[in-house]
Image (cartoon, rainbow, N blue to C red; front, top):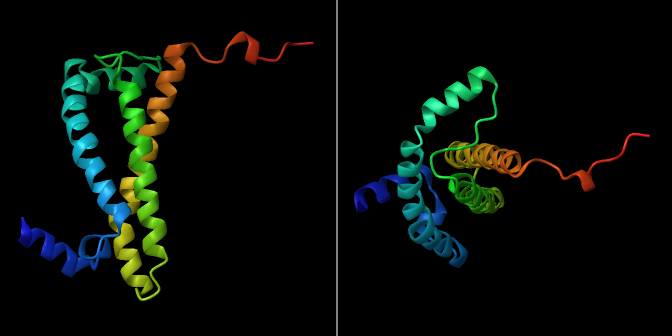
Length: 147
């Protein structure tokens, strides 16, 4: 495992792993304590709901299929996505400020961090949409009356 870490640091020069700031260490603990257990639970919950088949049928028929096996899935994955987007965007903002790094080195780091951010944003929007639909959309009080 140490060889992988050394290879990663030597290849990408990712200072978060060679000289991690205090907040990054906290983010690693969030990953260990929250993300890892939730990921195992979510994979099982999605598989129990045949999520992939349901998603394909929902997309193909343009129906609003909201049940993903376990009704808690969208809420948990929304929290997961928001936390992932926040921590990843923090890392991106920080490494972009590293003045001693060249633009080429920052681009290489971006190849690792930006797709992870994009995936978390996509997941967050998807889960938010599912939650809103399952709740029933905007309330009548929130809609404007036609004159």
